[in-house]
Length: 139
Image (cartoon, rainbow, N blue to C red; front, side, top):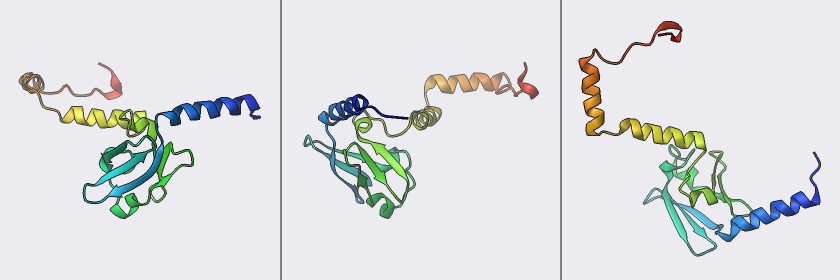
């Protein structure tokens, strides 16, 4: 596949636009707070618990401390973990892939307790509990 000069220029414009909102100039792991701390070119500092980011939750402090910043400053990389975080996504509160984020939200929703959920579970129990799955997926 041949890349044209025009395509290169368009890609450079997109990257420049992303960098206008800030790019990482430094990043470190703070052991005391168990947070990743990122300083941006805009003077903004963002810190987030490492457990919130895809690929970082079960990592050792030594592995979390080894952070590389991509040349454009738009990505953070943990070589020992083979984990990456996209800085523009961090600014939007996105800490991983769509699939991973959906799984995290689903797990949180499943653990949530509310009066409505409790009442529905009791009503379901009165009816004999959750219906059994049929072999072959039929009704």
